[in-house]
Image (cartoon, rainbow, N blue to C red; front, side, top):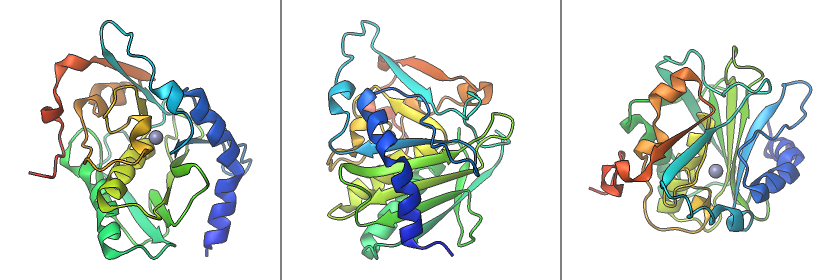
Length: 249
Ligand SMILES: [Zn+2]
């Protein structure tokens, strides 16, 4: 039985490095130093940390969108194995007692990935051994609205578990959906995109009311299978309208 306090304590253990990570604007794995589980990678998404670094980079003449992948302890790209698996299961632990509308929005954020084919089908389960565990809190930590921890010791073994933490106090349904879709992108091994308004843009964690969708920049299937550490796509190869998963229509 895992209590909210135990979950928060394990999260607190990595929180300081999360803050540093976000401020640096880098995409390398932060090592939690957990001897029992092996090293994990985390992405923390804060409302106050790291915005300065994220808003730079508009001097790229080719307007390339860069997306990095999270890495395992051995430096390999973090991927669920086998890479052609059909399902990744998830469960939601609601420690905050969120309203039904928020609970549904969280599910929509996860299931948005099922509208696109290059990744795995997400399947909700009540079992403890879910691949991805999503922990809903009122608050995670000051300045952090969402974070994802991925357990991946080496590339051969691949990702073994992922944990998503979200603080939903005062968060509306659209924002909860966006936050969830973003964190699930991390849980599948994606790092941040440097394209503004991309689903994997680090600034997504700021307050926003527009529904974000999964774009071609998030869906490099060939790169996923090849285990590429990063990839770049010309920004003008697609428009906002081509983003998949748009649910407002
Ligand atoms: Zn993020």
